[in-house]
Length: 444
Image (cartoon, rainbow, N blue to C red):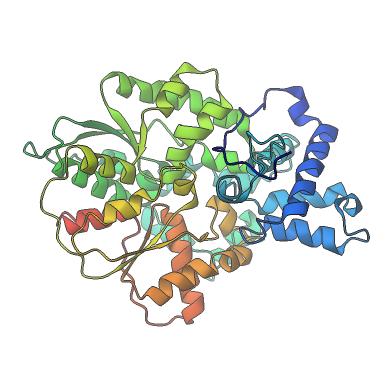
């Protein structure tokens, strides 16, 4: 038997329609099999809090082995997993096609699917993931919504913590009006080398409701490079529901969104997602959840991350002229869901197209993990996990601290506030690398 594998990782379709997937004894048997392998390896001890929790409960039991741990304790391990896939992609030597067949994130997902099916995910927590509904409601009076969700609001944040379990100190995304999908398109540069390309921008719920500036920056940069853009947003990709284990809803989302977006593909458009979590869903998770759906399979082969797409233009036709130096260095966080796309640090490659750009890359976890990091029971752990990334960004002295995941970026900035005790490190408000491209083009 080989100790590890030199072959590229591969993944199996998620067997969520099989009865055995929900069988308690079968799940417990698989948890014990994988946890025992993890216990013997311990290579992932520093990735997230799942592994320290697992190893501590083993080390603290009487036998010092997994057989001394009660199965009821396994929930704490699954609860700490953010489904970032970093253990699968960067650490574990036993992922398929290795015969031990370890896929820790999808096993944690299976445990959450089981828990969700048993009604153990609270109503308030489920309501937090209704991003389209929440975004549309908040956009009616965004100033009021943002006031109520602001950190330090002693009137509303304790109530939100009590009712919804959102930690009172967690930075929450702001809401905007108008929505990104309602903004007018920019004029396309007919002289650019890449003229003739067409893109349907998958807006994502975050860009559509929380930061339209990211979408506007992407559209302007693409238009300056001769790319015609349309906004395609049939709905949330389902990542928030996947995190909770509502896999049936995610499957339904995958089928409806794929049916919508492949119509754009048929008209000659590339699909470009504006945040990496959504690109990951469309490229990789959808085909594993509904592998029999032809639209899903076609869509997965037509999706680009925004930074990946700009680099593709640069590599093929070449970028339109006009880029100028930034007035400061960049601390770039390599978001986990960008890394999980297995395409390399495309945001770094994109930013290095800017003349004289000084780009420092951090591959450490931000500690945010979608909605995971804002919850009362996880927030302080998330800050702890993200401390190395925050310290690295702070010590760089960079003016621009950005991530392809804006929520991760905000979590890092909040970590910097903790480390500096509210010090005077001045940070630009730009969240996403594409905003710096727009800034360098003078389009900001």
